[in-house]
Every structure is written in structure tokens, then in C-alpha cells.
Length: 57
Image (cartoon, rainbow, N blue to C red; front, side, top):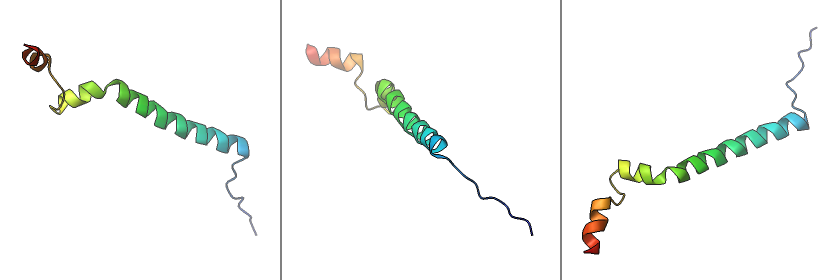
């Protein structure tokens, strides 16, 4: 009879996996925050410079 050992994650590797997931989520958030203006302009909801100049006069 052969016994196949079950997969084992020690606390160190589990901690690294959690850190990787948290870091990936935060990195995506920072990237979105940094490019939010470009994303809004892409969908046509951002203010353009021409609109701002016309409103000021």
C-alpha cells in the first residue's frame, strides 16, 4: 500500500503568500490612483483644458 502525502504549507510559506496577495492588491490600487485622470479622459468624463478656460471667462 502506497501512501501519498498531502500538500503541506508551513507558516512561513503561507505568510509569504498572504504578503504577495496584499502587495498585489495595493499595487493595483496605486496604479489606478496614479492614472485615474487618464482613465476618466478615456471614457469622456474628465474635464478638458478647453472647458476650464471657457468657464473662467
